[in-house]
Image 1 (cartoon, rainbow, N blue to C red):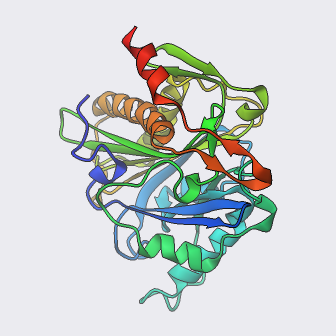
Image 2 (tube, rainbow, N blue to C red; image 1 turned 180 degrees about the vertical axis):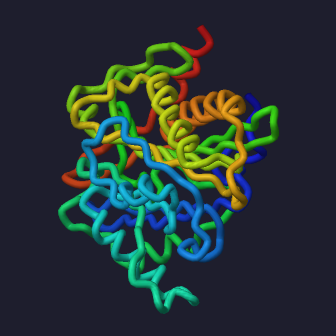
Length: 313
């Protein structure tokens, strides 16, 4: 399928992405990423959404209300596992301070995570409310920084440096689907059907968070079905979906009017999700750089030369 102009989640009109990347001393390699469905007040202008759980070994906050009401009312915030409560509190600080939110007494931060404790001193819980606000305030359309950025700063995938990746697809009906991933998982790295590397068993017990954006007029159930298709894209890359891997997908639509998408129109959107998820994961690897972090551990970037040789066979 054709990509959008940027081949990024920001090809969905209105979607913005921001990072707060935190690198300090020899041990802090972490961060937070903000995905905004639009640039307005999300509590006052909620978007339809859904959260899909493929393997629930994770600490995703806010999912039950999203799936009960079918709405998202805050930025989507990937981060580090032990930072989830602090990021949620930072989202509350930011959202409650917005104009027209003075009377708000209930708000649902949507915060996902993967464990960056191999490269980051995760117990330090270095992310602050100011970092959360910075990620949200700097969120922009346009090109998205990938690899070791924001929530991907300390991520490892297939034994290589992982992190943030993004891609998009356009359907023949004119809808756009964009995917952003926080890749921090393991398995047997496979690119276009070619086995590249089998990662060590321990590296499989991390996680991936996949965020799907679209402008299609989908309802909550349809968005849940789209979110579920991320798992097909994940499987294509060689994930082994281990016991300890928390694998989640969050989907939302920027379409504001009542949903009108016919069920017969879903299949191209499913294909778009699968293709964009697969490519976003590859991007998270190919755009990453070698990182030295906590305890002196170094995780190398995926070597592109051998990968190119494999793909030319």
